[in-house]
Length: 422
Ligand code: LLP
Image (cartoon, rainbow, N blue to C red; front, top):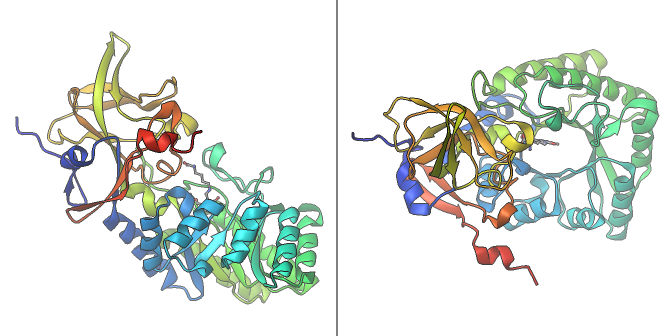
């Protein structure tokens, strides 16, 4: 039979697997650009005084930094390493937001030295360290306070961040935040611009955002009346959901953002507040569906009456999400696209860990050793959360677009893995 191959952004994935080897991350440039353009047309161009930043943690390489910045987005960073990468990619530093619940003193200094656009302050320790260093180098640093709005969102508990009992953000209770605001307003080298919240990730609806927005608006009204502080900027975080399996829906920017913006305008009017600049910071939504991971099938193990395990040449080292969150994925045999599914199999990674199962009980055409398995929606939080467990080198990353492919991250070698060992 003549087999049909899986074509992704115009490229034949069986050929790409042969050309670059597996496991391999493949990213579709067209898909990333389309997402950026949707943000532009349905949010940035539609509403004045808005900003969008890409949450680097989802997938950061030099090339992605350059790409999203060219599309008019900024970058959300959470570590010295992410700031460094953005800097090396040539991203103007004023486009950066810097997050983190425990930024080190070195990172704080780096952010100030590099003139990072906004530092999102999470705690008092950081606020004081920032003032001290900014004073020393005679700079004025623009900050937002990250608040904990105390809303629960319906997603995996490991990726919710906005609930009251959270290591992130400043609680609104007991006057803690107001005390921080007073202090910040008194600091000579700090310019408080406003607030930030992030309620969670992989959200199908904007319910939690709307709840958090209302809490933020009440706060803005309160601090204007009591402290005379007028909020200029409000960053409402990321969290737009994507399609992985079944009924998961890819968020539409307009459906998600229009009600938020309408609520914002209405409430600002009602509370007599100037409309602040609104920033969104999606990560997963921009790159998640742009990614496919290619593996080669090796061992096939049938436990009669129980399960058929298909062993692939990667696993939790390139995708920790099934093991860590029970995340679900879909896959196809990239070299047998015209064949109907006929057997139920379980895709096992190659790591010495029982939780290293990529997909349980999925239907595939008859699987043979040497087949290429393509797992979908692996563009976010796979490469960025990859590891060298079992001393397995990280895969390469290939960018594809309209039938053309180019390497953007080289495959790690054994030598790379021991290069810092003494
Ligand atoms: N902004 C802040 C402050 C965040 O903490 C996050 C994600 C984002 C933006 C981007 O969220 P996104 O749009 O990608 O949902 N490793 C987990 C996800 C952790 C997300 C943490 N914060 C996973 O693999 O599902």
